Image (cartoon, rainbow, N blue to C red; front, side, top):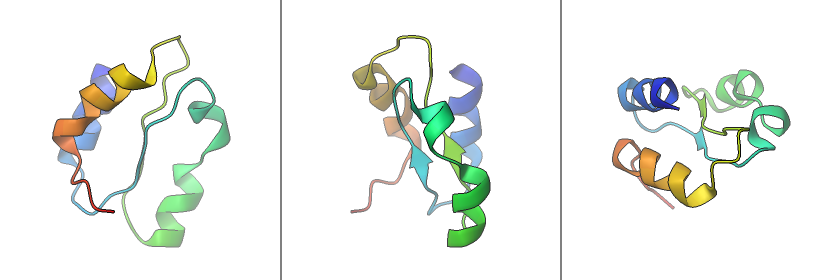
Length: 67
C-alpha cells in the first residue's frame, strides 16, 4: 500500500485512481482505462482486508478530488 500511495503521489493530474476493496485488484483495469481516457491511472485496491476508509485516508492527500 505504501508503494501504491507513492506512485499515485507522483502521477500528474488529472488521474483516475481506483480506490477499491478486495475486488479492486481483479475487477478494474488501468491497462484498459488509462489508454481509453488518455490519462495515467493507478489501481489502489488492496486485497488483504484493509477497509475502504483506510484506503481513502491513505490516498486522499495525493488525489485532486474533482467531481
